Length: 443
Image 1: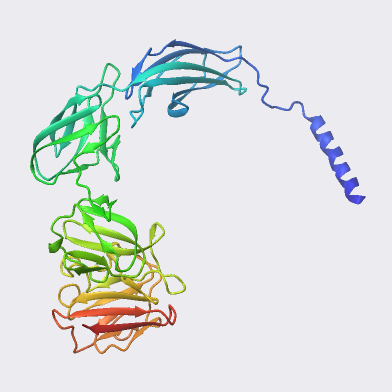
Image 2: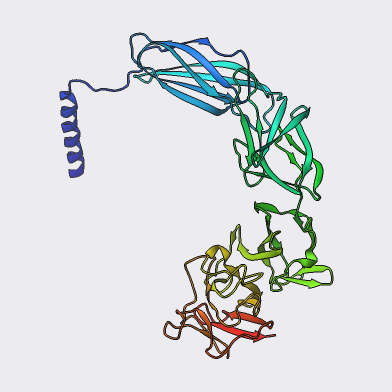
């Protein structure tokens, strides 16, 4: 009963306070904004600057803003907001975006006028839009321009004496009285408008061959297709292609488009050669396989979902190497060092064991190493000297006072790896992540 009395008293006080106010200011929704479209194009092209002229007014209520929008179907693709402090004439321009796979059709110009009391008026105007029929396109390669001639609707082509790889971007000239230049470049996965990033055209042989592009579908050619077991590898950098794939141990690997694989360096921890065939050599799982066409080798990393794997609390996942004295395919030309982007992923071999195989003088320095094992490809969790041990007679684990930082590996004083010999480093986490055991075996 007491709570009810208190609430009643509070409501009484509130009514007195409200009653004493001279006025309560709220939007009244007054006025009646009007829009007169004085001029706009009767039709336009994609990539045009669309001019408009409107006259706005109200019934004595101050105006606030005029919003002008361009819609393709129901999607707003361009917009502009103008402050309308005064009644009268306002003009502006909207850019009609040039987009992939958008056919000729009717767009909508939407004018929305609002006054200071939040009352709005909306006017919709149809605007037929069509794709420009460019007479030509320009392929721009290192400052040199090749004219791509029209071969059919939206289809353009140029033939010349090109090398096997040629990178450039494509530029369409301004079309019509209100047109704008449109550029097409590489977005990492394909060709897109509004970019000048180099498109990596490629052909099996050099010489005279055509380069083509379609301004509707954005399909271009030629591109050499690289595949693993029938699935496309994606271009991630110049001459570097990658694919994420589920693999079983001993599964055959069939690469398409990669020529001269006999001369490639093959990481035996992940890939096993048997005659002219290649087989996957690590434990079953998902992996990212990257083909480096310049260095002619494969980089392999374990994955968890769509990300490179890290070490899990139960000892599964992945272990990575960061540090000095190791590098694939050659430590001299591609040492990992303390660059986390170059971290090496040990191959999971089952039973919470991880392996890296090296050749002294080639992929590992014979007389000096200073690297350590990490939980991820980057800084964070790592194996300190209290989390990993070894009984090796040639490799030791640093403790911070024995010549190496805690967890860093070194070569014992007076010892060195035998030049040309192959060594296998295996990290066993079956006893726990803080009880890792490193075994080093000379093959």
